[in-house]
Amino acid sequence: MKLYPNAKINIGLNVVEKRPDGLHNIETVFYPIALFDVLHVEKSDGCTDAVFSQSGIPVHGNPDDNLVMKACRLLAGMYDVPPVDISLVKQIPLGAGLGGGSSDAAFMLKCLNEMCRLGLSDDELMAVASRLGADCPFFIKNKAVFAEGVGNEFTDITLSLKNYYWLLIKPDIHVATVEAYSLVKAQKPTYPLLDAIRQPVEEWKRLIKNDFEISVFSTYPRVGEIKNALYDLGAPYASMSGSGSAVFGLFDTLPEMDNLFQDCFAACGRFD
Image (cartoon, rainbow, N blue to C red; front, side, top):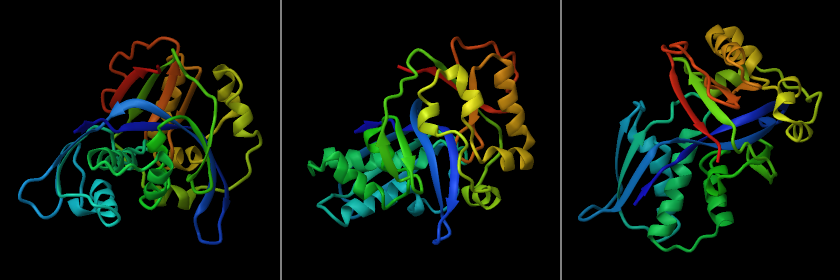
């Protein structure tokens, strides 16, 4: 079975308060985009455990610690799941605020649910996914949501970016989530995000912010330069996604870039 785990972008990200457990409560909108990894899963013959291989963008560290393998082992510990061969082609950049690893894990759960005929509902899969990461459950239903808590409490919203183009740029910079949170200042937003997204996209630049941008742009000026460049290209709205370092812009038509971002990963598409 071949699946295509997709990325997400954050529209706005307010870090509203630090919790007693040391984590932070946030407010954000998760929105899926058509930037994909490739996940290939087949039942294994003659093996007693899952076998994992990965290609594409390098993922450092022990393969057994990959979220795909964690998802597989988690579900196998709960249900009758046979050994599988797993191949992941990594195309969503890491350390970018795009949720690629979480998406891979969520799609692994969906794959095994279908392949093994477990019959789990979306809500049941989301409960399992929540044990792998705060944003993993988002990729089960994979539609726009308003996220609160640590990014794990979802409310369905009506938001469509249909017919807008997106342009995503990621410099060769990895922003660790822990580092980003250590530098951010928690504060209540001056304008409610749920109200802001109901306004025309042309108003978002004035109303919507990402609290991580101040510290990330200060530490990594190139990320801030990319956001300014997207506005210079005519984007009505541009923002860093999550804790960075990817930056996206929304456009009525895709601009000519003239090698402007030749030192970066670049991808574009159109919202359906």
